[in-house]
Image 1 (tube, one colour):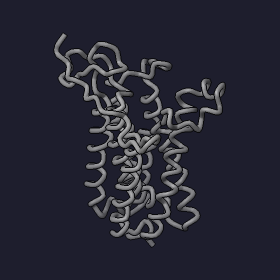
Image 2 (tube, rainbow, N blue to C red):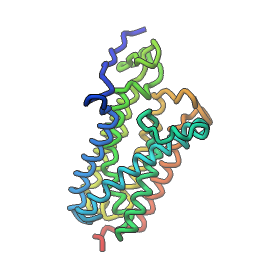
Image 3 (cartoon, rainbow, N blue to C red):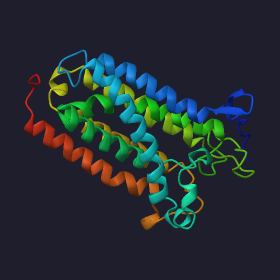
Image 4 (tube, rainbow, N blue to C red):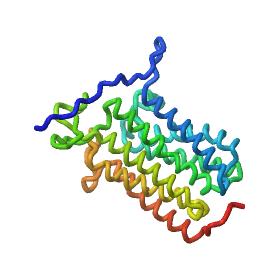
Length: 271
């Protein structure tokens, strides 16, 4: 067996204030939301105007609720339905861990739909600018997963970046959290921002949303080949993981939305 990299022992609690501790995971959510909020304010200052600056401020609250409520309910429904059916009082205990990206995505989509309807904005325009910044939260969330030593990768003693995780047994594993931070976070963010620079793409409402949905789904499917499946689920239908099964329809929806936007919306400014 080759030598493995040392896992950096970082305290999961970033800031301790007396009896209260602020965890890196909480800071990841806060940082992702705050940075996303600031970048969206910049994006909507360029045509087409998806929403006003004041509406961006309002949507921050909607997005936070969508991420937290959707993420938690998604984990309960997709990953441990029987456990939480038997222990319903534990559903609100998000500090114990257990959030799902796909649930959070559904929560944010619901927030976008409701917000757009109530504020009289174009659903797809709002969705496009929000999708541009979602990878920021994904990046910081995966870094927090790595710091916590959770959601580690499969055994890979010969991998260049393999390391022994505190809760992953004695054998070196892929640091799949870092792979996901890079592919689902950094790379996808760069792709989204590069595409946003093209006016012809920005004015095809729904195109950027389609790119994000398909792009994240593809990135997640790839990274799942290196990530250890959840112990209580293991490999599912056809040897796929739950993350892959949830991402496959997301890719199809994203590609369908992109094709629809390209056929339906001609490059023009919003009315």
